Each structure stands twice: as structure tokens, then as C-alpha cells.
Amino acid sequence: MPTRLVDVSSMDAGGAPVLVEGVPAVVDYLALSHRWGGSKIAQTTSTNLQEHKQGIPVQSLNRTFQDAITAARKLGYRYIWIDSLCILQDSREDWTREASRMALVYQNADITLSAACATSGDTGLFQSREGQTSSVKVPCSRLRDELDPPPIPNCYFTVRKKERRDYTFTKEVAEGPLNTRAWTLQERCLSRRIVHYARTQLYWECQTSIRVESLGSNIIPGPRERSERFGDMGGALQDGFLKHLLSSASIGRAPDMDLERQKININAYSAWYYLLSDYSGRDLTVGSDKLPAISGVARVFAEHRNDTYLAGLWKGDLPSGLLWRYATARLGFQRPLSSSPRAPSWSWACWDGAIITEMDWDGRVEIEDITASVQLVGTDPFGAVKSGSLRFRGPLAPIHKLSQITMPAQQTFGLVDANVQLCDAAGAVFGNGYADSYAEVADTSSLIFCLMVVSVFVGFSPFSLQVLNAKGKWAWCLMLRETADQQVYERVGIAQVHQSAFSGPKSAITIV
Image (cartoon, rainbow, N blue to C red; front, side):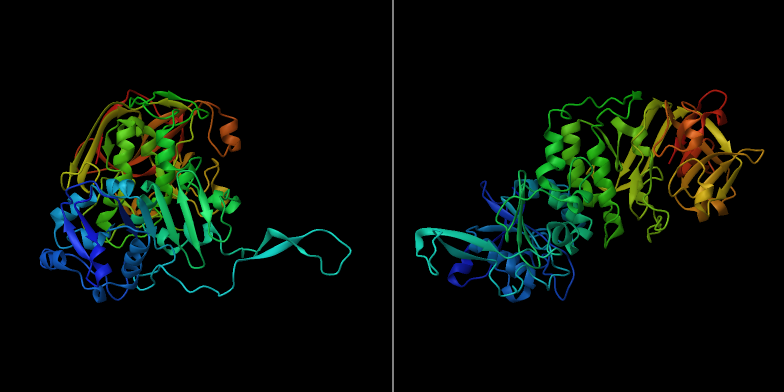
């Protein structure tokens, strides 16, 4: 059970909702998924905790909170969980502990109420309708030559109003205001059942179906709905994250790293990478929440994978996990505004911006003797981190020159959105890459190196002419920058490099 719940039962007699701490028994409750912002977000703090236990003034609640409480009462529920009321907002200790329990809160809630259309707390759940009925009943009659044949008793057919194209599940839910926020991703994919309060109607989403109020039936997502799915696992609960984890094809997979892999093999970690692609492009108000805001999903994944979490990566699939990059060159990455890093350089969490993980490869892992360590901010292994390091041995080669790619014709190795060419001592191009920030690598006086992570058996997708003509001679690499410490490096990007660039024995290095 959650540590605290809001009890709305006294409102039936004209009382106020009450904050209950330490619910002694297992009770049914609802959870609210909403977007912060607006004129007032009522919060529980260490100062007003005792007051809220006596009663929370209804007038202090914004419209979304009031509507959620109304919905709970109409549905016959006594308890509802609302984050700002059930977590002490001025206590870092309480916030950290409750954030680590977020997965349980949404997994165990009977239903999650989703403020899908709300741009702030002032929007509310309940929206004005157009005023037209969505369907009418027309009496049936037998075919006769009469102008006005008598109706058949108790026999009707229904004519439904055609649904407008812009009032779809994708438009109102998947692409709605709520799903632009980072915290709400795990709230959606961990919930058992959700009622989405959208602008025009209600949507029901659960582990087996999506239902639309205007249709009253299960819908099969169309092409646009498919486009926002978590890859093969789906963005909808009915074919999403939890279902994939519980499938017989992926559960119980050994956490040991596969040293060889073929692209056609199902990767048990692909659900995680698809989620990261969605999550990393979402907005966060507090930058330090980058790892905590997905910690609930990570905790569930760890339980089913029996794997070790490393600041957003998984030890059991570290080679693929290291091969993340920006999603589009046009948007790129941005450094967080905070002066202190929130993750090591090898973690995607140290940047702001949408990422893609290059997991679609067939080849051999070239790094070995891997050890990893992560220093946590608190005690939650899935929460915020102070620092981290990776130590291993692998093939290392110097990059003598990095040249910025300014036109598609320079992307000679088939890497869409690559922003740098890698050159050897003679100036010959031996690879293309994705520098996390070209400005940073261009301004550095430190040497840049390539670390071969995976030697590829066949080639890459997309298949450029150079790759097709040199099968089995390519590699996925990390681009690394020397630090002041000997054999200690920072990640600055990834690259597709010809294997001929590497010679000599493997080097023992540390990446921080």
C-alpha cells in the first residue's frame, strides 16, 4: 500500500478530504496521473502534514484535483493517491523514498485517472461536450409497400455520429499534453487500467483493450497509433511494456552478456530501448529527476530481468546500452543547466534530448573484463547518481582529425544524421560518427580515440555501398576523450568505423 492516501469518504456528509498515513489494511484505491502547473498545486509539507490529516480544504485544490476526487466518489472509491498531497514536498528524504515506490503505487491502483487533455492543474478532468448525442436509436420495420410501415416491437438499430479524424486515441492521448511530460510515461505503462479524460470523450486503456466512449468497442490502433508504439511492444497497455516483460519469450533470460548475436534474434532488452526513445524526448521541470522519473519502470524491469542497473544502462546488455546517440541532428543534445553532472558521460541521462540506441547489429562483443561502479545520491539503486565508472579492456585507436559533416553527401557510410567524419593520420576518412556535441569535440585540445565495442559480422542498416562492399570489416565504437588522469576517458559520441583502424593488443581503460 502507498504510505499515504487521501480519504474522501467524509465528503458525503459535507466534510473535507483527509490525508491518511499508514493505512493498516489492503484497500482499493485510485491514482491520479496529471500535469503540474497552473495557479495552485496543493502540496503536503512537513509544516501542514498534521493539518491535512485533519482535513484538506477543498477550495485549496485546483480543478484537476477536485475533479479527480469527484470521479473517485462517483466510482465508489474511498481512497485516491495524488502525488503532491501524498508525498512531503519539502522533505528530500520522504520524496526520495516515495519516488522509489512509484512503480508499486501505479501497479497496485485499481484504476489510474489520467488528465490526458490538461495543460495545467486548472484544466481539470471534465470538459464541456459539443451538446450533440453521439448516437440515435431508429426503430426497425418490415419491408412493405406502405409509406409508413408499422415498427417491429422492441427492435432498433443505432446510427452513430461519425468520429472526427482529429478526435483519436493518438491525438488526444498518445500525443496529448500529458504525454509530453517525463514522469507520466511510467505512470501510464505501469498502470493496470487507465481512464483517460480527453478533450472530447473518455478512453479506457488496460492490459487487453483500448475502448473509445463514442464507439463503445475495442479499437485496433491504426497506422498513426502504431507509429507511437514502443517499437514491437507497443505504446498501448494492451501490447506494451508489462506484457512484454511477462511473456514467455523474455522472462527469466539470463543476465549474462551475449558475446555473439544475430539481428534476427529477439533482444530481451529492446522494450527498454524503445521506452528510452520515448522517455528521453519528454520534458522535465527539474533536471535532476532524469533518472528518478523512470526509476519505477527500471525497478520492474530489473525484477523480471534479474539484472544490475547502471545509471540508465543494464549490465547484461552493456554493449548495446553504450551505443546510444541523439535521435536527430537537427535537434541534437543539450547539456543540463546544472553545473554538476547528473550521470557519468557513458550514460544517456547526462544529456537533455531524445535518443536512439543502436541495438540492431549482428557481431561479436570486443570489450572484456568489465567492471562497473555507480555512486548513488541516496539509497535507491534506480534513482539519482553522483558519478560512475566503467573499466574494461578493448581495442583502442586514435582519431587524428574530426571533420564536421555539413551536407548529406559527406555521410558516406550510410549513417543518417551523422555529424562527424573520422580521419586517420593521412587524412583519409575511416568512419562516420555521432558526436554528442560537435562544438565540444571541436574545441577540445585532448586527444580523441575510438574504442571498438562490437565488431560487426555483416553490416549495418541502412546499408551503404561501402558497407556492402566490405562485409565483416566494420565496427560500432565509442568516441572517447582523454582526461587529466592516465587511461581515464570521457565519452563524446559513437561511430561506425572500419576495423582496419585498430591494431595491437587491447587496452585497459576507465570511462567516467
